[in-house]
Length: 87
Image (tube, rainbow, N blue to C red):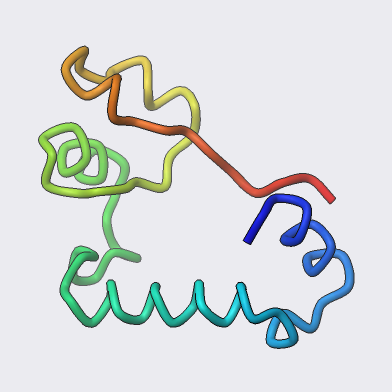
């Protein structure tokens, strides 16, 4: 979804009316089923999440901007920081 499209659905709801949102969820399910995400990810604490991400064992991390002060130089070209658009 584009940021604008997500912002519209975030304000109005009815995400299932968006073909792009449905495709996004289907991709997320494929990634989950392929084992991309750490087991029991909801139980990971800050230090373990950083360790997995910074060592290249995790493709993404849910973190605040303060976490990226520790980002190794060799990873910097490949890391994109993003977030939810503000409606």
